Length: 308
Length: 295
Picture 1 (cartoon, helix red, strand yellow):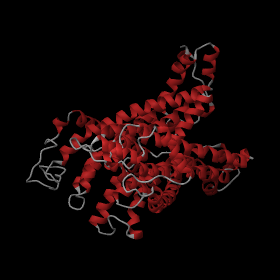
Picture 2 (cartoon, each protein chain N blue to C red):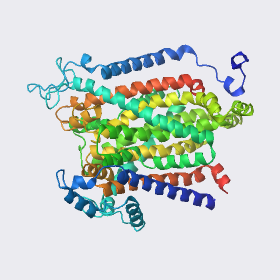
Picture 3 (cartoon, chains in turn purple, red):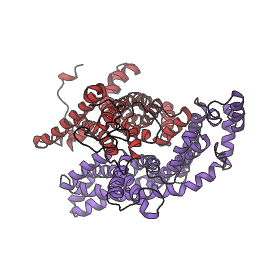
Picture 4 (cartoon, each protein chain N blue to C red):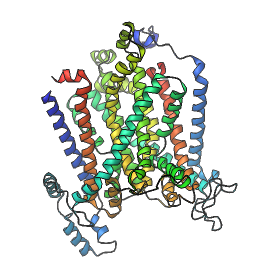
């Protein structure tokens, strides 16, 4: 078991390292000169060269890469090209807001996903099931930011219940969390529903019914547990959706967060900030998936038995 | 092939669920028909915008600024007095184009990676799939942000970013499919008969991968359009001459409190297009996937 966990942790580290390299290559190897932009458009070649030297982008790629890696190990993500502040400090200032948005949205998604999925599988073909099917199609086909815009139109502009933007405490979280949670949650509810219906055809369900177990117990205890194992495998897809979603929601609702930090850095070509923000998101993604994999052993006895 | 003349094999699992009765079909066909008509309309708008649009998208009417929907301007006008309906019609081309392009580019790459990994197995599989893992570790919008920082915001960057982000999904599904087919008896038989790897790939593996490929491609078009509109909304593909639907929403957002129509209709257009593509994809899946049909 410990060996399996160790192998899994090692694999996650390798993926993070790969992601670091991929982002570095995209940002540094692809054409596009940050110095030109920072030195302003019609600066002379000498000045641009000087800026390039200051930023350190004139050195060979391999030198920059090894320096970046050694900085990373020491927890140094470099300094912003624009404000010259350490990137790590800016990221840690913004991260709690993103984390709160993502965590509450995930919680909301989990609750409505499992609840609606189970209920619609239980009342298969009923009005709830059909309504959910339509809703899942609708929500799944609507851009996240448009859902947010509609919410603003209805609840802020129309009814005046909720603040449009900003950090106005818990109230300002309601709309972004609901939109994001709804988006991920309906996706999850479909997975749970289809999983339930599929599992009901398994031989072990027939056995349970044959031995006279109450249908409710079959459904909510045995089938549900099996489906949750399946649903957990989809979590990695949902995490990706969630992380991408926070970027859009932060921009739309003008919230603090690393996503918005990254979007604002694009225009200024602030490579270290973009690099740091994406790195942080990738690490969160990989860590969450690692956590899920480790939880697998807890909820699925078969995995634990195999690992032993 | 003599397969056609052989009696159909009877397997226990597949014979159990009967085909669904025809009672459920009319409503399904109705939805599919509606989706197909919607899609046709959008494609027409994408191909011949000037036939359908009542105004040119750049026509500014100083006397009709931020007017609500009425008979002259069905979708209202924007802050420069431009007709929103015409802007939406002229924006269709970008959205349709990006959906199709992203799936053609990203889908082919993903299919190639997935089938090679699944069919060849061994170290090819390991290397390719680790690469896909790394790819997945960078969520799609952040990958697009990285690309835009490096290459500068443009429509080409968006197409590239959306294509790249659809690769891993295709790769994973098709790898699983190819892996399953590789050990099927008819592949073993073909190998025993001396067929080359390439011949087996073309004659057996690819045809069996076709149904999931078609379904994924259709559903992928919808997903790509959604991602592209988000990227455009974030300002990663600034295009002022022929704004796409996502960018129309960015522009309209500034006038949210006074002109609900400028953000409602472009969003409705995106949703209608993606819904119809998804409905058709679902219908396709029901036809092609025996398991979904049985349910």
